[in-house]
Image (cartoon, rainbow, N blue to C red; front, side, top):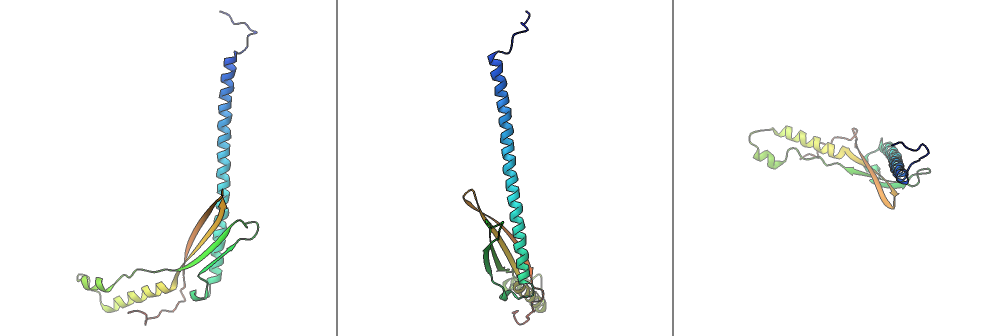
Length: 170
């Protein structure tokens, strides 16, 4: 049977074509929206990482040349324009190294005999590291979608000029 050359598409064919087109355009819009969300999140995280890095550098400048007792243990503030929506908190924490040789271990461990001078040197070194090392933690906070968000970075600072006190060791 020959088709009439003037015959067009049926209503059903047109509706199916429009449906396929709508699904395709809808998928493209969803993908584009997700792409924009990811781009905004990436920009936000880049900004936050840059602000955290700058806050760590400022903390280093403040600490450099001073003893840990001369620097505030906790500080906070808000960034200036154009980053006024971000706040920062900085904490300087003492780092506690574990005791490698404790008295109970020395008495129980008959197999590995270590002389008293070696034990004393290890205790002096551990004590020195405890007093000369600090953890600097910077937290960047902001509000996004009515929820507080935060990003925290840490860095360890060792004061190599800290005097070794051999009288502190037991």
